Image (tube, rainbow, N blue to C red; front, side):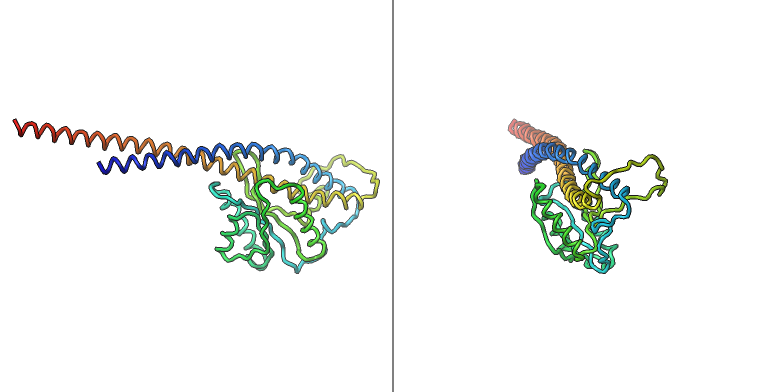
Length: 293
């Protein structure tokens, strides 16, 4: 009797867990659809403005800009922004991002403690604290960071970079490729990568558009380059958020399926235990009746 009661309690507990994971899966699916729409909608603009700036910088002649060439602060530390999640239960999402981040930090001149590290997300804070990695600043932007919040952060990075406080800015995040593929990546935000020269790395030489600048190229780049940095950083946040929702949706679906399988297995064990108990009771009844006869 005690065994069947124990199995029945476990069946009830597994059923409760399955209902919770199923609800979390549905919530993650709903959030994923909205986040995917945002990420996909902003990507064409980000790629378009970056391509435009690259092409203009290549055709404008010998024009130098601090956001492209830097200010020569090679002896200054590099700033690394790591984007993780605030909540768990999202499978390998945070682990993959943090592994890539630690690999990048170890490759720096001073190791993991040689650069300036800024963090987004509570899960990354616990991991870095456990590994003794100092965090200069933690940002709390939530699940839906606005463009104004990200622009303020990008403006701060550009100001520090042009002032020579940091040698560069890199972002470690989960890049969203598709619903079935997300890739942890280290993105060089500052300085912006200069355009490739004509004829390099197997690049095909062809027709190159010629532009007449009004106003001049320097004034245009003064407006377009900061806009490119802001849009790129905003795209990083959008990709990270939609990747988190995908990971949580997949993890909760797997948990729901496993809970269902466990419930079936426990139900089978319960039926067997109950059948054995009934058989034992019948045997006792028959034996007692035979003894009385």
